Length: 68
Image (tube, rainbow, N blue to C red; front, top):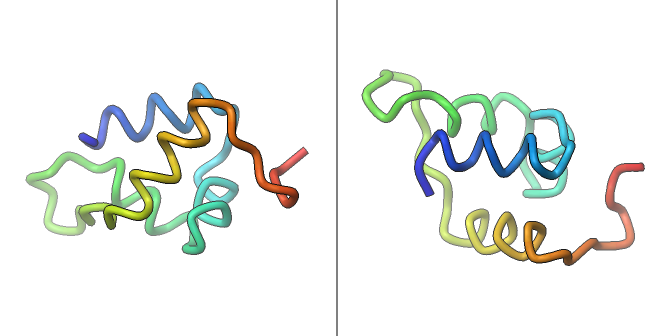
């Protein structure tokens, strides 16, 4: 997923960066870095497991600790 796709997914899910971070077992700062342009020196490429989770969330999966 590109940084723009991650941001669109997060907004579509109605989550803040901190909330998505929690759902990906990381923090909001990491999500912010994943949403930065790939050329930015603090950009972070998401792990494959994170991309899989985001896609599952977009398809409707909601774990029991999903933010209200």
